[in-house]
Image: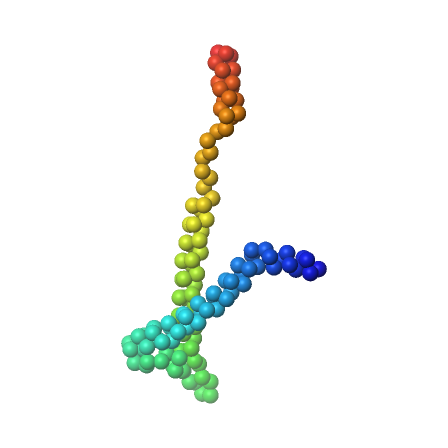
Length: 124
């Protein structure tokens, strides 16, 4: 069982997934800082409120935190767009790698091609 676990962990997919999660969480922190510290104050200039997370609608005793929801939507859109760009770049890189390079035929293949050509000429 330990050997199976070692083989499972040693596969590239598991390690790639772990690296992706770690980088993704760090990237999420950067995007949150971008939204909270740069974009929200800029948008707040036009709305008259500097901090969007403070926008709250109150109906009776219920409070609807519209600003927090807007922050989450902005975070999602930025992260989704960056992931889209990354996947697009990786896919274009993989497509370039997958194109096989034409190989020069070996001597045996050249001889076989000559024999086939001679046979075709003799049949005519």
